[in-house]
Length: 201
Image (cartoon, rainbow, N blue to C red):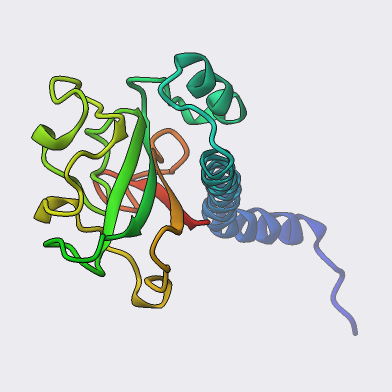
């Protein structure tokens, strides 16, 4: 004879199974949300780098605060200001050192503009010493690098495959470093998580 089906037991089993699966589902939900936010922020960082390199190659004057603010309009969610904020952008023009100089044939930093907070990250392309900037007292040096053909600190670090410029040609590099605080669940990515993009144009 068949035993009658006890629906009360099935309800209890379903609650136990749900209780076991719920923490895993919550962790998956937080992972998907965090991953989506990080991807969105990274796409903004990447687009900002492309825009910066393109603007610099077209001769936009980044000495102008108005041009810097216009440049940053597309990155409001990154929290970067002209001289502060939660990120930094290095816009660099690189050229080949002049013949007969100390940096003959080497890639040198010819021009640099900085937008944002330099405490977030140093430039991966290089950091010429303060005394060869047009205004060495400015905490965010901007403009042409003086004596770049003889100053060892003006030599740029670029991938070897990109170091094929002819004399008189320029390469434009945009580096964007933005804090990832506020979009990550827990301390999964380390103590100071940041998103970075380097664009060569």
